[in-house]
Length: 601
Image 1 (cartoon, one colour):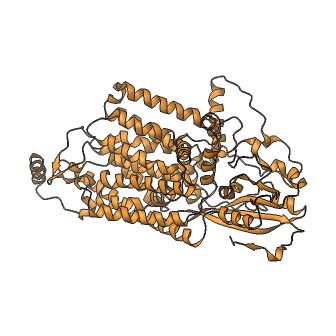
Image 2 (cartoon, rainbow, N blue to C red):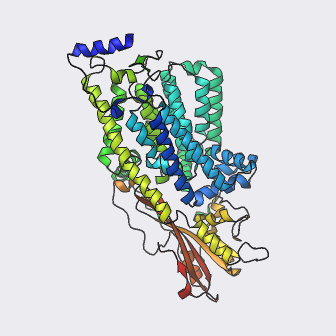
Image 3 (cartoon, one colour):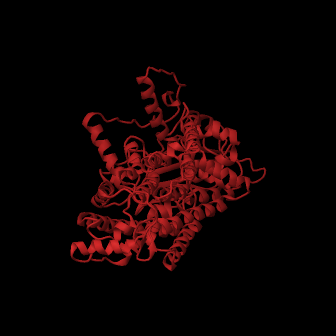
C-alpha cells in the first residue's frame, strides 16, 4: 500500500497522469502470474516446433556430433576428439549419456525440443519484458527453429542463459546456483563461454563482490572454465576455419612473448599432382581494406541476428545500450508490490548487464561467425536485454521517478522489439513451410538410394568412396562407415590428415561402385556480411565447392554423375547453403546418364 501511495503521489507532483499505452506493451512480466495467455503461447510454440521436428532431415553437423559421441570413449572424447571439434564437451557429453540410456537419434531430437520448451517457459514466466514482447520472442527464428528444430549444441544455451539472467536480477544473491548454470554454459561453445564470462563479470559488479566471497562458487567456476579452455584449444593439425583462426591468434601471442614452435607439416602445402587443379587461392586484405572489412563484419555481427533492416537493428541495439546507461541500477531491495501484484525482485544491472552481449560482439569482430551461429548472439542479446530492462516499479511510476526521456526510451525500445519479432516470425514461417516442401539435407535421400542398390546389405561388398565433409550425412542411416577411403569410424576427423582429396588415385585404383561427393554451394545467406556488402560471385569452374575438381578427375577416368540429391539449410527468409550429394558411378554401369534422376537445386 505504501508503494502505491508513492506511485500516485509521484504522478500528482507532475500535475497530470501518465498517458497509458496498451496493457500488452506496458504490463511487465513480473506483475503477471502464469496465466491462460502464457499457456496458449507455450502450446502453440510446441506445436510449431513439433511440426518442424517431424519434417526436418538432419544434416552433417547434427550427424557428426551424434556419431562422434557414440564412437569414442569418455577419455578419448575429452582428451583427444574435442580438440578437433572446437567446442566444449557439454553437448557431446549430453549426447553420450542419451546413447548410454539407449535413446535413439530421433528420440534425442524430441528431448532437445523439450529442453528448448523449458527455456521458453522460463522466458514467459520470469522475463521482465512487457507481455506482448514475451509472447512474441519465443516465435522468433532462432528460438523457434534454428535452436529447437535443428539439433545442435546451441539448443542447450537458452536453458542455461535465461535462468541465469533471472538469478542475476534477483534481490537475493545465489552465487553457487549461478555458477551451476554459468559453468556448464562455458563448456557448450566459444559463444556461450563468452556469455558465461560476461555474466560472471556482471554478477561481480552487481552483487558487490559477494560472488568473490563465496569460495566454493569461485573455485567451481574456475574449474568449469579451465575445463572449457582445455577442451576447446585446437590441435596442431586442425583443419577448419574457426580452429585455424584460434591457432593464428595463439601463435601471435606466443610470438610476442618469445615462444617459437614448429608444428607438424600440413597437407595443405603438399603437392597434389594427381588432381586437375590446385586449391583456390585466398587473397588477404591489408590496410584500409582490412579495416573496412572488419568494420562491416562488426556491423554484421550486430544486425544479422536481429533483422534484415539494418537501421532497425542498429537503432534497437543503440537504445538498449542507452537504456542500460541511463536507467537506475537495482538496489537489491526486497520485493515490492504495485497495483496489488508482486514485482520482479531485484532489478536491472545497468551498464554491467551489457557485458554478455558486448563481449560477444567484440570477440567476433575477429573470429568467424557463421549464420547458424548467429542464434547464439541473439540469445546473448536477449540475455543482456533481460539484465538491463527497467524494473516494474519504475515502469508504473510517475515521471518524477522516471523522467519523460526515460519513459520515451523504454517505450520506443519496446516498439522496436515488437517490429523485430514480427520480422523474425516471418523467417520462422518460411523455414517451417520450406521444411515441409523440400529437405534440409540430402543425407536420407542418398542413404535410401544406396540401400536400394544393395549398399549395407550383408555380403554386398560394394566399394564406396566418399569425399569432403558433407559426405558423412548418409552415414547416420548406416551402422558403420561405408567409405573405404575414410577411417573406419563414422564421424569426420577434422585433421589435415583426414583430407580425402589426397586419396583420389588410390580410390580410383579400387574401382569403386559408387563415389559420393558431399558438396555445397553458398546461398543468399551464406555469410553474415551479405547484408552490408555485395555478394561475391562464386569462382568460375567450381561446382558445389569441389575445390580440387575431384568430380572432374573421376569423370576423366570413366565415371559420370547419375544422381544429385539436394537440400537447403534454411536461414532467415532464404537459405544459407545448398547441400548436395553427387553420386558418381562407372560409365559401364547399366544406368546410363539419360536415366539419371536428380533433385533440381
